[in-house]
Length: 325
Image 1 (cartoon, rainbow, N blue to C red):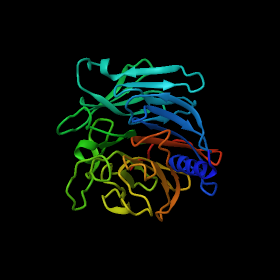
Image 2: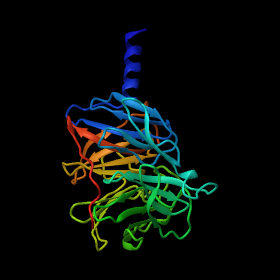
Image 3: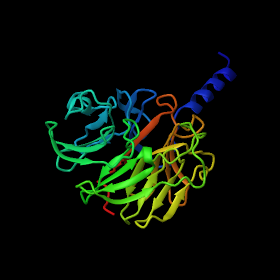
Image 4: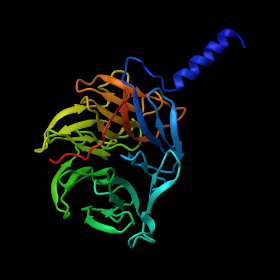
């Protein structure tokens, strides 16, 4: 092969994979993409430590014991030991607690401090807490105008207070529910004087919120889904910080999904369905500078929805429950 041709192929290959910038923080991460049917742990230099084939997925967690809590389908949740590949615990919502024959999906789950697992069902519109044997120990009914198995919720997190912070995608509302199912706080995600538009990519628009994070200052950080932005809301519902679709130089936000605040205060966001000209995961500081980005359309595709940063420059990041308002 001629030298010029070899160089062209090398440049083409490198442009399609994730390049690690030595000047940026080096992150180890757990991430998943349904279009490639793949969940994986990627080390700080971009190598795959572990991977597993999955189906559709909208939530994931690295547990304190090193196991991964994930879903292999819209109804099947499993705890996997990456070292052995064994399934340690599993739960099938489609056949549990009166659900047989019903249309439902799970888009959120969480291992709780007491060892129980929160499972959030869309279609049946409820939050369940189940023990290690799958027995329901607590149930909360969600207030949903038109229940739908794919649109009732996206991510849900239990707060330190015992309340639940719920992204109700179909209604474009973030609600905080008490443990008794009462609405303690809510925020209707605005359309910002724009009309909704169909589509999952940059061409679409709406308020179909994906995730919400309660910050230590009591504010709530919201990924607006197909609203292409992240907003920070005070308890009295005022926007005090906003990252819009084209605020980042050379990057366009599409369906904004997961959120994580790092110990530095920087925010990691998922940028799903944005096309291979845009990174799939982005870390920004509060001045809206891009600190780190992940763009790998060889190993992952255009449906990389969920990510958890596990360590930075060799220092583990400890996951904590969301803060109370």
